[in-house]
Image 1 (tube, rainbow, N blue to C red):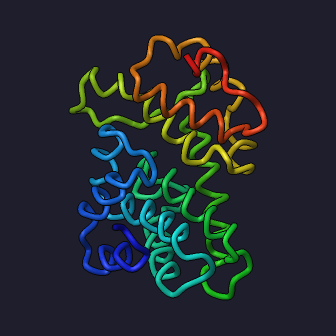
Image 2 (image 1 turned 30 degrees about the vertical axis):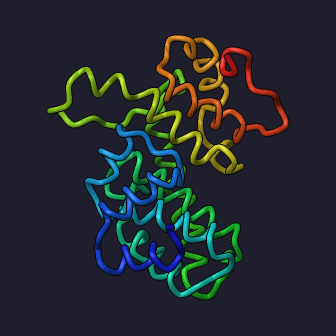
Length: 215
């Protein structure tokens, strides 16, 4: 069973790919293959998801969470991106947001730095969103059209991860994404549809899921 202690052990031993696989096996969070392939390219992606899960398992500030948060802060560039990657930045933003909501806001350790890092990351994420609401992952030149087909799943995963964050909802093109998801859901694969269902619930838990998403 994945515990806060085992997550931190993976991190301290630099077993980042093993950490990512352990998180995926426990659906923490749901992590499609297209997402895992991108996150495992750096240490920051697994660290961010691991930190988020660690916070769910052990409430309140801890030395372990602070250590992992500092590692993420060190990987953020001046433009706001973490490791120059869309999904890694989204994962880090979600982890910092979880910490700030878990008693770290104003904390004398990393609290102030995390608030600034989260704001900067959200602004950068907004620059990666296209007019229709999908996120541009900046696919490497060696990836084919097959990679382009994963963009809806990558976008849905980001909205699933950050949809319950008010700052995220205010920063990005939310209305455009909702219109796109309503128009295209029926043409998507089952996994992406499942991600969209969760994303829509997190974006507005008081509103019923659109009929096309529930189908």
